[in-house]
Structures are given as structure tokens and as C-alpha cells.
Length: 66
Image (spheres, helix red, strand yellow):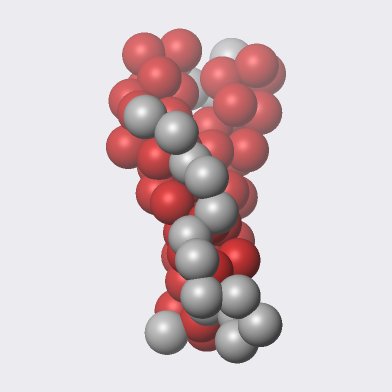
């Protein structure tokens, strides 16, 4: 599971970064960037915290907040 979370974290992070760069250069509209960030940024955050939780040293979830 940790490998899947790392892959999801990297892919969603790269999509967020690419959409911001492409919108900054004017290749895509900002509404497309906003849509990509709304979809992929929460995936990035959740997969990051699940990757941290997947270690064998600690059995508790890190604080994510609401």
C-alpha cells in the first residue's frame, strides 16, 4: 500500500505543479488550473499523510485537521 500511496502522491503533485505552470504561461485557462487543483490537491495531501502513516514505527495517523 505504501508504494501505491507514493505513486499517487507523486502523480497528483506533478499534476498540480504542471497545471500551475501551464496556467502561468498562458497555455491553459486558469479555470482549468482551478479544476485540476480542486481535484488533485486533496489527493496529494491525503496520499502524503497516508504515506507517512504507512511506516511501521508509528501506528497513529498524523494530524490532518478538518
